[in-house]
Image 1 (cartoon, rainbow, N blue to C red):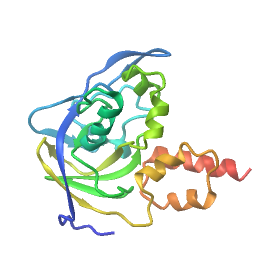
Image 2: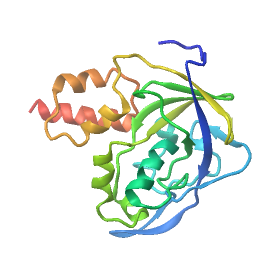
Image 3: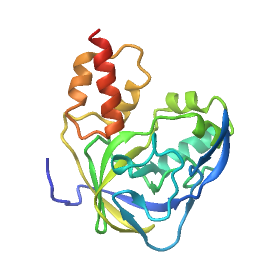
Length: 221
């Protein structure tokens, strides 16, 4: 794949968001950093994510392959119409709010914001914590149906991020899955084994890779 960061497509970094641990009741009491708020000024982004950002459950969240979560203001505008209230940056717990997605973002697509280089690795799969955050027990289903998952990314080069920065985009291999097609796999009752094998060729987040390998093992029984 290409490694230069020529301005093929630009996106604007609208907000950089972090959160602290709070107690949520998700079946039982749990600590979560899903409630995030925009910060002013530059924020250090290393291979584990944004400095000062809290992660409550490191079994399912965070780590080098899901160091930052991105969502777009354009998708929030859609949700604002659906929910009939204004959706602000950080509502879904994303670290970076960009103004828009480029056409059909894929696993392996890269963004450069200043010195920082990010690589998309996986869609966000909704869970009960998100439903609790949204105060809607049906929000997991609504999020799945909307097919606007946002994307996790690994940090290939560290540095500072700040709202207002422009991100240059370099596309990954055209045979790698789009973020939405990978998201759809989680809600497909019957999965094509060939599609799963092809998906493993992409630079996926390790948790998604492990899940797909489990699906393949189950299909071979």
